[in-house]
Image (tube, rainbow, N blue to C red; front, side, top):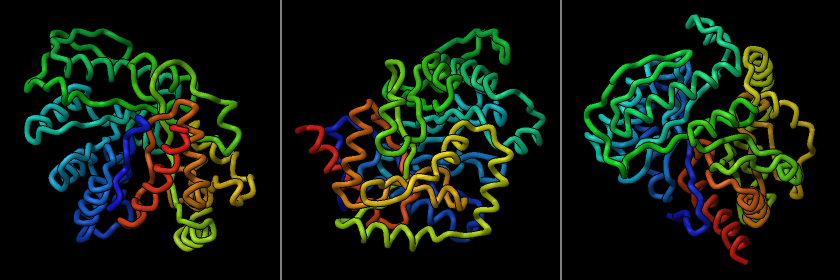
Length: 340
């Protein structure tokens, strides 16, 4: 199996299969399978989603750790679900039990109906302020504490975490940075700011702000020839009227800047010159744009994003182990371009 080379200084994450609409009898093994593929491909980790309609991401993270040797779960953390002490305790416990590192994907938003059901009516920008307070407490505890903090949303006094997390297992921290509030939050907590990429030629107009690390969330379907990639793409994500209706309904109940941006970008015609494809997003099959095309075309686009400062790539759920082999070829091409 092809392995991603890290000589370009990038971190690559896959995404765990979400439990929604999955068969409970086969879900656990499918999670383990995708985790093993990602581990074998040399990925840094695997994103595990969270929302009201999914199984608990910490339980899924445990399966990922048990099924792999090096892969780091990137656990989505919604502050409404649990106290920051509980998150720090989970990270410390998994480090103690497995000797493995966890990454945290701090979630400031979500579907409005989910938040309302939980009694949370905090406005969009204020949720990022809350996420900053939350994360600062988590980081303080993982750095050894004790932590005393008094903010707008959280207060703790002389709070200490046991077991202690070894320095080398301290979690990486990511947060959505598509909005100005998200960018400010990323800087405040020294997190990797993750966004959706713009179409080819437009991302340079919105180059990485600030000096902190940055990443993008994107799917990849690539093959030696462009027509092969597009055949796979159309077969995997056919247009679905029911999915389109669900997508439109979902857009009405979210204030995510990510989703608003993507919904406005779907008018770009696709071609080998434009590998940026939104059909999976528009048909409610996934939550990110795709790059589709030949190894060199997709690799050129990846290299372009890297040249703008993006060093973290969160890819979509792989359909097969071979998908990761093909993706490795595009990243290898990108690496060669950057070394020229």
